[in-house]
Figure 1 (tube, rainbow, N blue to C red):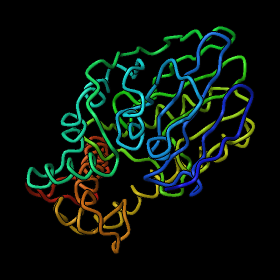
Figure 2: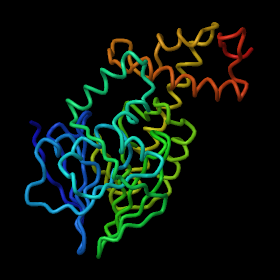
Figure 3: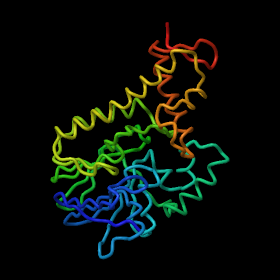
Figure 4: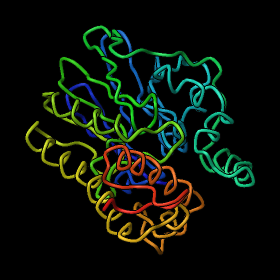
Length: 299
């Protein structure tokens, strides 16, 4: 069992696992208002340990991925909220698995792993939220900020008056943005990054890795470095396309994961990521189809 510590930033308690929030773990938020207490993204550690002595009035999920839902089974009677675009993935484990776009022969095994390792449960009672929705906690408000790209419904939360902006899985990691699901969108992710750069806050929280970054200038610098990974991937793809290549060859070459990484979803993520980059590069005239199914840098 991974240890869990709490770090307060105003009325926002960040629940940090001892591994620093690396997947499959993450940093949940516990926000105490004068009228209600909200838990954001109940993590695997919360699922393992619970929150003894803490009354939670509502759970808000930033988006529909297993690591953000792992503690939901601890709160069977508590209302659950998520952006309406990710509502199916929270209501149904089957819908969550379908969103990854895995080969059919792998999906059943992956579903069993998620239920076993993350304790996932269906939450058909979950309620959808829209961009700009404000949740009143008494002396605190939570404003939903739709930041799609990672998933269709991925959201941030602005906690006021604490000026704490939680950006979920825009996690500032060296790995860079993840947009490898069926519902992911590269262009939307880039737009969400630009939107985050416009938000002036005192603290910025991520679910993985960084945890809390203090100050808009520091956050902006780290966010731009994170965004630049997208350009690095595209450059790697263009270099590989000096000669005609098929999509299968691009997937095997890898522009997201390193060659030695052996994950069951790696090829699926590589394919979805490459498809989005190729579509943009072909539309812009940088890459051309030299014959059906074979791509090359335009000459």
